[in-house]
Length: 257
Image (tube, rainbow, N blue to C red; front, side):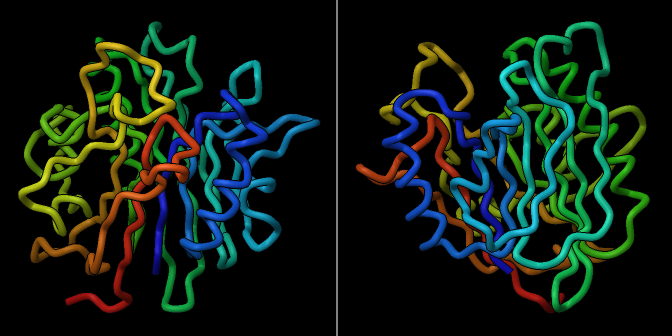
């Protein structure tokens, strides 16, 4: 199973020039599941279909900003249940379409629950991110089998919200353990997906660099239930960078170790 996550940056910048880069890149990646953030969906614009074509089942968030921006999960395989979780946990979240889509992907080897998680982005909203993360995690704990959390989590590995996902921190008397795909494959290399070297980067002095993640829930022995085979940064090459974020492509095996 190949999963790709990417914040696509809406239709900002030179969208007509960016679109064919997305189209070619997604064809080459040939992902089974994609978690996409900052996707535009209006009566006139279906950005995800424009990028991916017609070969995917789509789950769109209903939580969207005035320009139609939200999140979308795409699956080559059929989709079952879709749950959208309201992440407006404090009065400070009202100016941003923070949300989470939990999608039941009916893969050939069994059900995989994929949480497209898009919490608050503001640098001083780690409290909100922690509350949002705990809310999502509690819902995921109710689900059996394989669970993946992927998206623009707007926090680095050292943040409490990320340390929580990987079993290193407790939030609201809850603890879980997911394996970071990047950490599993690149244990000594810093994750960097939102960096000023990107030609579309517009936020000067932004302190967080490794903010896009793929996390696989661990089983009773502490191993991810879907073994992580590979994790690499994508859409990061000169001439092939259509977003202000770089993405991640993660290959997962079907059999647990």
